[in-house]
Image 1 (tube, rainbow, N blue to C red):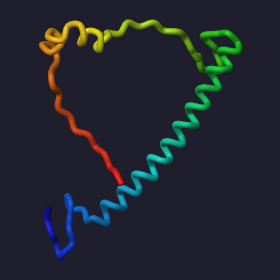
Image 2 (cartoon, rainbow, N blue to C red):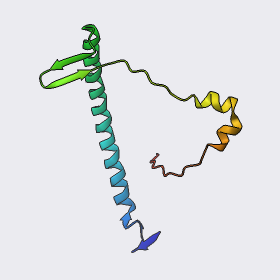
Image 3 (tube, helix red, strand yellow):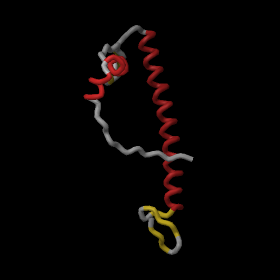
Image 4 (spheres, rainbow, N blue to C red):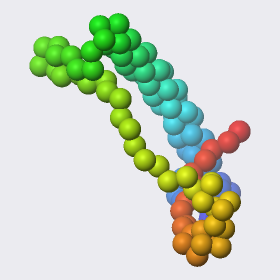
Amino acid sequence: MVYYDGVRKVNNMTNTEMLKQIQELNEWEEILEGAKKQADAIRDSIKAEMEAQEVEELECGTYIIRYTSVISNRFDTTSFKRQYNEIYKQYTKQVASKRFTISC
């Protein structure tokens, strides 16, 4: 923490500048959330139309739209851990990461 002329600076940014950036970030995140909701609604509408037509593939202009069922195999970590806890511990490793959050 560094002080210049009695004003607290954080990484060369005053608290006022940091607050302004946080507010701007919040505004952009609201815009993104709204855009994501609209995109999801459009996506759901297209899926509903494909289901109504009972098709998994649809050509529309230069686009090919696919809405297909996919089967995948996933490892059941919870059951494995419950049944083979010692083996699970042998193959589990800690991973360090950073998390960025802003709370009010």
